[in-house]
Length: 300
Ligand code: PMP
Image (cartoon, rainbow, N blue to C red):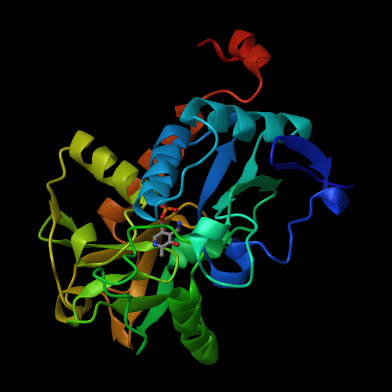
């Protein structure tokens, strides 16, 4: 069945949802995007994703031609038109069509599109047994150049890292920043737990401030777990009591081995499991309803 795609003000069958070869999103990776998820009729942390999209756009000097509220409606309406209650949403704003030069002044109108799809999940056994990761030689982009805090269409840095992970057959990889501190994974944020304290690196060292990351930090605080944003090294990861990754697609997923070093006893840790179940509960209640008529049945 053909998907319905939102593209520049219209809801089109996917065959007709086409973007120009002169679009600078394609020619130069000039644009921003979001990966969002819907669970059982609600769009998880939709507002946080939209805020990040608009902040990314501001940083690259791109004026999104819709208000945040209008963009929220685009996401919800695209899901409705595809009759989707759960799935993955890709929201993209590019600089738009220009000439072959890189000058954004030649691009009068941004291109906006929204694709919804069903999501490919990590198998449940990876949540139960945990991931084995490696650290790759590709360093995360330095924040003083193209800051990783912008979720831009330029993902080559992460793709290089993913290729290294593919070479050794692991599903994710740890990237260090240019100074050798642990930054994040290719599409996920990283957390460690030591002596009951949860830690994750601060965004200023060069990483994407994940929506899932922030949600998990909130959940930890609510559970009385101390949370720190701090700079750490691989030594801290190898010697952690627990380690896990967070991301929209991966959710919260335990990590049990890094670069051949077994983390603690090699099993997903207790606090990690506590956070996984708190996160799963949160996905049931957070975010706007896609179908307003669901309000009468959900008791909210
Ligand atoms: N880091 C990178 C590089 C990512 O691409 C993602 C996925 N968007 C994340 C972290 C996790 O972010 P989020 O929790 O918002 O999906």
